Length: 212
Image 1 (cartoon, helix red, strand yellow):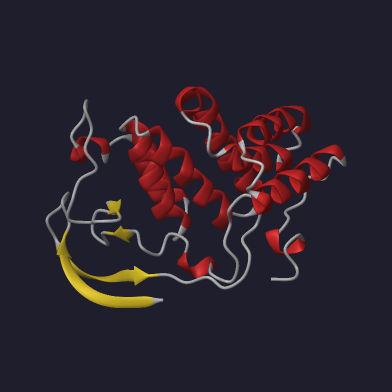
Image 2 (cartoon, one colour; image 1 turned 180 degrees about the vertical axis):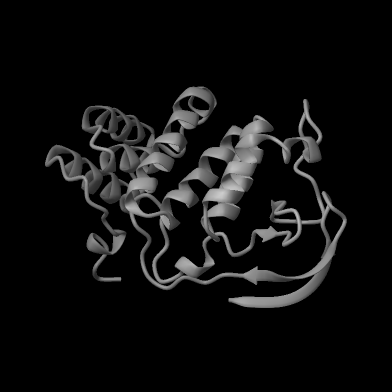
């Protein structure tokens, strides 16, 4: 992990502070089936900067996440954002603040992916809430135009014990996967076995790629 310190001015309150810039991350080992990295929990959300004065959060604190309907400072006064600021600890707070901005901006792909990050750093009760939030955004907003994240979605559904729906996703991704992609097919088959056995626990890809 490469980190440098830089000074940036918050785009909301204009206060200048020193922030850590995370230039690169490295994670050794296999990820979990839902994409959660191993041995790098400290890195999840670390690249998000949060203003200590007004709590604006973004990967680039000196820039606003653009919106067709609102200016970012207006968004920051909404109760949803203030509730996150008051009720959640870092790093979960920072991740949720960014996710909600993406959601308000109708950036559905980044929103659902950021809620997945939130599920990785939350406790199990909250993780379920954020997984379901990500699933809702994906199924209702993203799915009509995107199909390359089916396995990740299937794994989150399985962890939420939605086994029948999860099986639909693994079947779909199996049909879309080239027969030459052996590793991906192995992962899909393993996921299907978890679903068939109604196993809702977290699994790591290292379980099927043990020889590597």
